Amino acid sequence: MGFADDHLVALVDEGLGNSAYLLDLGDGRALAVDSGRDLRALRAAAERRGLTVAYAADTHLHADFLSGAVQLGHDLGARILASAAGRRAFAHRALADGAEVDLGGLALRALATPGHTDEHLSLLLLDGSRKLGVFTGGSLIVNSAARTDLLGTDRTEELARAQYRSLKGLTELPDETAVRPTHGAGAFCSAPPGTERTTTIGAQEQADPLLAALDEDTFMAQLIASLGTYPAYFDRLGEINRHGPAVLDAQPALPALAAQQVRALIADGAHVVDARPAADHAAGHIPGSLSIPLRGQFATWLGWLLPDTAPLAFVVNDDQDLNEIVWPAYKIGYEHLAGRLTGGMEAWLADGNAQATTAFLTADRAVGRPYVDVRQEAEFAAGHVPGAVHIELGALNESADDAPTSPVVARGHGERAMTAASLLERAGHTDIAVLDGYTAAHGRQLAQGTEDTRS
Image (cartoon, rainbow, N blue to C red; front, side, top):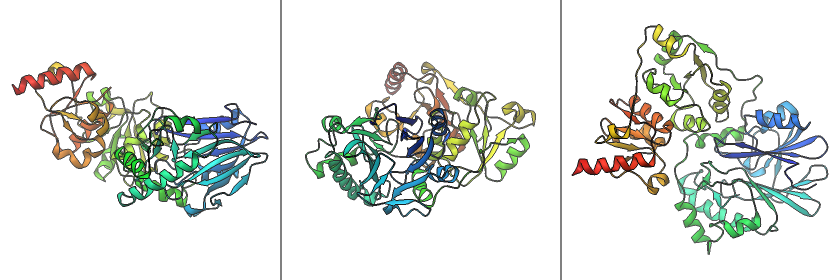
């Protein structure tokens, strides 16, 4: 059996930019690699193929999602495979460098590849002496390598050097060896994020700029220079995965809440998350609510901008899938979900409560107002409106005081901009606006208006 698409299913989480894998072992059993806590897609893929997950392997203690291995062990009796160096506090087969697991015809060999994390393993799939492919987790990824700063800035250089040696070791595999990383396009663990998800050893020797580095010092400098910011919740999940996420005995739910209950929750310190589209939030929202429109990146911004310890109440539209709120929250360790406002804003207003609004402005109406750009540093550096105040969205909670008075916030289709506007409102700013339908042409119009204003 080859390492071919008819035996291997890649399960891509577009929002977090990660891939899990389900490998058909040919006898009704399957191997799951780096499965997340949201197991819906994996279960469906296994059911379609008539497979039972017999092994659940993790390449490392993830910093960006909770592992589903413990749940698979509980539900299906799957044997958990993980690094011995990870010191996980639950039953598993602890793999040291070079250890092999007989999968029944195929075998899995553990390769110690520290760098992204100390205990990182890559998992080489073998058919006898033939090397079919390697699951590289957060080690070698397409045209890059995963970041090395998750264990603290004081260890970034040390781990970058370890990453160099790990990647060099992987390139000793045959050129045709398939590479199946966990982190990929859109993942903040990538350094920098790429666009492709799978590759081969030979292709990476030709294309990966980090592998082209002349020596370890050059590699380290290039990797560290590419590191941007990452979501705050990354720092929490490693230890949760070490101890094992809580087993779920039932489908998590989002109970219905009356307006009075939401008001009481707010008074007790709960946060309100408005998951409706940006335009709906702009038209009317609960004062102080945080706009995080429901889309692929929902979990990223929830985990970046809010604590995991306070209750969360949600405002949604009737046509939105509540599972797409619950599971993204649970997969990053947010379990204090108080519920959702029944009847939406109509019920909130009918109960006599106030609402706030946020203006959408076209570019011509925004000329002359201070402009706040909330994109990532690399995006801002690639091009921005002259005179724009740059505050990354992830830093806005701490840096709201640095924003100008009466700001206009813009970014792409408006989701990040509306989130930023709601954060500024929570911090006490008033007269906040979001640029409606921002495009490059609007940016040029704003820039021209800025120059005219200065003159």
